[in-house]
Length: 354
Image (cartoon, rainbow, N blue to C red; front, side, top):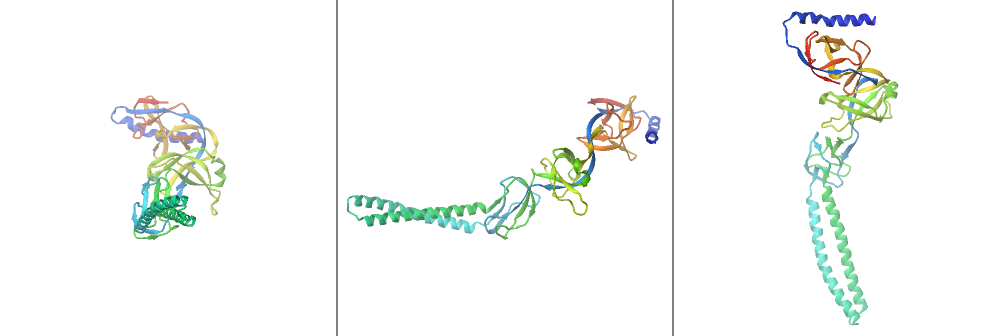
């Protein structure tokens, strides 16, 4: 039965060869080939998950104040330490100025008190001043020194308030939400914005619980984010220990490298392992062509393009694992120049890759 199936498919694919042969002669197509390999891999199942940020910070101010400037908008990427919001500083600046004036006044009095104490100390040693007068002068100077220390603490606190009036990004990331605008009065604990770390992205992949055994920590997988036109590699780091109550799916975490763009909850397709590893024939993805609804690859037979059908079982590292059939390890397949080939079309190999 299987043999009849292959004969039927190959016969159908061969029909265009006759029409091509009957047409006018054309120069051979220039193509690049690569050799089919065999490796030990697992079958995969394409599962659609969602893009998540493993580190999200809800930023709120450490001091109360009125928002004077909003320096970011949703979707902006920011560097660590970048200013995001600035609170009005009128009251803080006034407080800083007042405290500095008080410190200056105390310092003048302190300088004079030190001179007076030195003079009274000399008089006391000469028994020209009483011990009570000397102690009073000493305590007065110490009191002024304590006043200065207290004012310096107040100044440091006011300067800290000024510093904290600028809300900065705690890490490099993207602004996911903006919850405050100019003129809003904000207080500690009042979220101003939500930031997700671009260095801590993962795909939340729902897996049937019977396939969880094949999702091994540390294994690298192909991840495709169609909306971004991106294919990358992700690494299984574990799973969320709460199954979906309705479907019983368990969510596997597949960590991603840093991306230039990321959108929370965006769809991402992950080639999840769905079996134990086994010997499988690997075909380069660039060799795959869809023709009349059938996935096939082009080999070369007597200088002409020869299509062979394939059944894909898995995707791994830029290749596709295929079921047993006419395509076998060691064969050369066309990986470049195959997009417009016709069965039976003459070809010239300009490069053969291993």
